[in-house]
Image: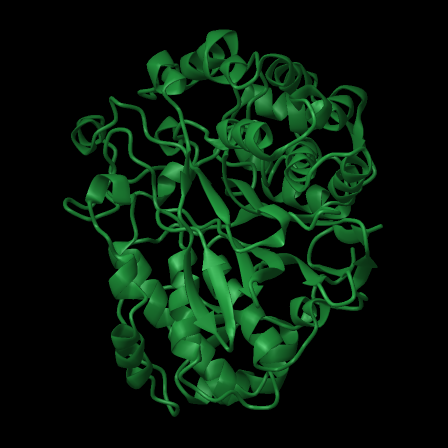
Length: 531
């Protein structure tokens, strides 16, 4: 297997359209949809549906989705929050009565009602041109006829065999004689093919009402969940107004809470109060990035929650100049800060991010996730829906803004991003990797706008990530070699990551030359393609 820390890619280029995803089959599907006359959102949803099949450990119809759409590349950016809510019967009191002191990954209590299907179908209805069954057709064919397991998917499966063995449907779907299949193996998911076909034919009601909803609700209740048919029938996402900040003459756009996009903007607000060194891996610059991240994530874990239930309007304060000045002033360039612990001890891992721009320059930033690799490991036996475990993000602390409650959305880590300048979109981008995503956005943009790197070079650059609430910094090899000793001298504990840190995709629009430039992360199996 290749070393995922070794870069070596060139920018992808095109004129008429472009897609960047973390799986080659998804990228190819998106380009084919664009060539068939589909819009950028048609292509993004088709690509994500394919990844739900070929990269099922990262995304799927049993998960959630956030997206941003910029029609014709203008600044009227529409954001969609497709994150699901807890069952109406789920309360902290009922969990405690059941003896639940922490939400386990394999627990039905980790499964909120999936929001991805609502988001995909609503976005295609509002911003697409192709019928839903045509958008889903490539994914349906792969699920029914077979797809080849890539090296990264094979690796992820091997890491999750113990989880998948716990559920008979998941084990029968993804494992061979109880073991992970090797790269190059052909796999099918006929139950998922039938479910996608039904959604493509009948729309979201096929998923949230009727036989599929009954299968999901009954399978979750059979293992102790509080889910009802009414919970599924009432699932609905919403369009939301993006939040933004200015950075080095550009405007950075993110989805508002319950996602952590606001934390990416907080980090950028702190970073712009410092003058970066010439070398993007200079220890002084890395030190500031680390501390800005630690400070912003401490705020995330104290305040970030579903604003529909908390009533907290946090954006104005968290993005204020006064707070950025205060936090930046706390950073000591010589030593690590004492920041303290956080309530959230759940590691946030797996997602897919998709960037698409079509010939009309409509830009899409699209992210979908089942949270951990293979989510909860729970799978509905008749519909083949693999459930996420996003409910692990909830706090079980009384009074915390992110405390579990009925019909509540958890704090979310998945965040799509866009950049505008001179009245137009110049970049659509995203970074996978759960916790890392907010820092990943800031890190990527800083490398572009502070150090003048192109998008592929910025993606390829070695990464680090301070684990929230600690002084531990996970750093890829090149950073440990170049700056590890100096960061350790300043009080950080520098360690190797368990696996590659994040994975990014991006497309830049060159309005002057009428071209598109794409970048895709070598830490994943995917690519960017333009035509």
